[in-house]
Length: 73
Image (cartoon, rainbow, N blue to C red; front, side, top):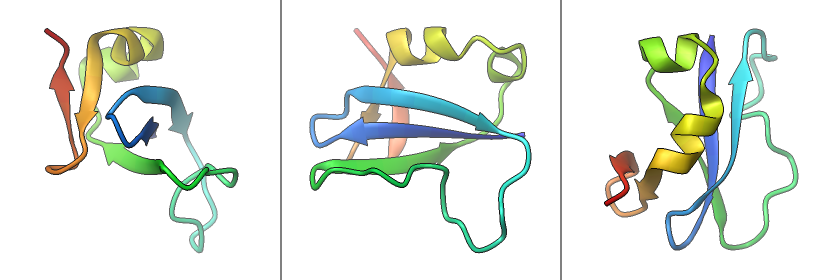
């Protein structure tokens, strides 16, 4: 399973996707990105494997400079 987050320039997570199978020529599952949106593939964790994607969206944001998830304060 691969996990992707779509986020905006402020680092707010807009959407989280879990993808089991994806065509080899696709970078990510989002085809409708706006100019200030990007996608980050995040490492698989037990929380993500359990299907708790909403908690990821509620508790984390993306550090756009480092391109990694950071816990919200």
